[in-house]
Picture 1 (cartoon, rainbow, N blue to C red):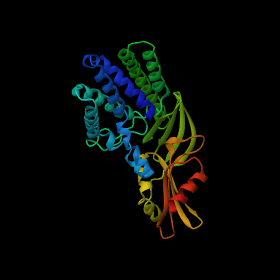
Picture 2 (cartoon, rainbow, N blue to C red):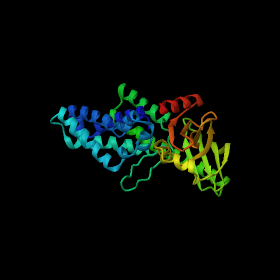
Picture 3 (cartoon, helix red, strand yellow):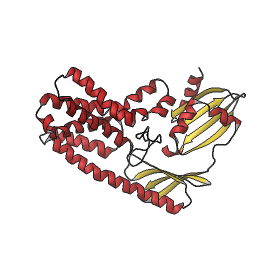
Picture 4 (cartoon, helix red, strand yellow):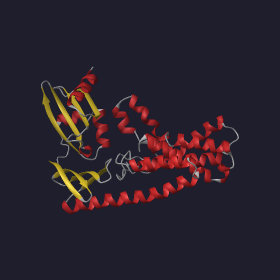
Length: 326
C-alpha cells in the first residue's frame, strides 16, 4: 500500500488498542502505543532509502528482507526498545504486542497488491503478490479518513475502527471474487493460457490483464466481466543471443527481470550502439508501457549505460541514459 494508507492504518491499530483494558487505563501507555503503531506501520518501508543509491537496488530489494518473517519479528522489538527509553515505566508487553500488530498488518496488506512482498522469507523466497487491491485504494484510504472524523466528533475510538475493519474484511472478499471472475473469463477465452496476470487499477471495475499462451501474449483491460484487447505479441522466450547475454549481466536489467513476470523484449541498433529493451506489459497507461529496462552496448558488447524504472516519454529516457553514461 502507499505511505498515506499505512499511516491511517497505524492510527487504526493505535485506536483499536484502546479496547485493551491495560492500555485504556494508562493514558501514557495509550499515547506510547499510538506512537508505536504509527512507527510500526511505516517500518517495513524504511528500505525506501535504497532509492538514494539507484533504481535497480530499490526495485530488487524493496518489500524484500524488510517485509520478511525475521523483520516482522525484529521491527517491533527495535521500536519497543527505543520507545521504552523515552517513556520508561510503560507496560512493555502490551506496547510490543500492538506495535507488532501494526508491523504485521503493514506486511499483510502489501501481499494483496500486484507488486508483492517476500513475506514468507526465509521459508520461501518467492514473492507473494495476490493482485486484488490497488496500491492506493480510494475506498480503504477514505474509509479510514471517515473513521478518524467520526472519532474526532465523538464516537468511540476503538469500536469505530474495529467496525471499519469488519467492513474491510467483506471488501477484500469482494475484490477476490471480482478478480477470480476475470481469471475465469480469461481462461474461458484462452483455455491454453499458461499464465494470466491480473493487476487492479484505481477504478474498481477496471483491471489490467496480460494473458500468456504457448504462442502469444495478449494485453487487455477487463471491465466487469468483459475483456477489451489492446495488443498481442508473439511469445518469445529470452534467446541465447550474444547481445542479450551481455545485457543480462547488467544490474538494472537483472532487477527488472526479478520484478516483472510478463514482458516483451527487443534488440535494436541505434547509430553506433545496440539497445536491449524490456517492457513490462502489466502497466499499460494511455497506450504506453512506462515500466522499462534499457541497456546500451557498444559494438564489442560492453555496457555503455542502462536504466530501469518508470518512463513516460522517449525524451526522458534518453536523458536518463545520457546521465548514466556520464
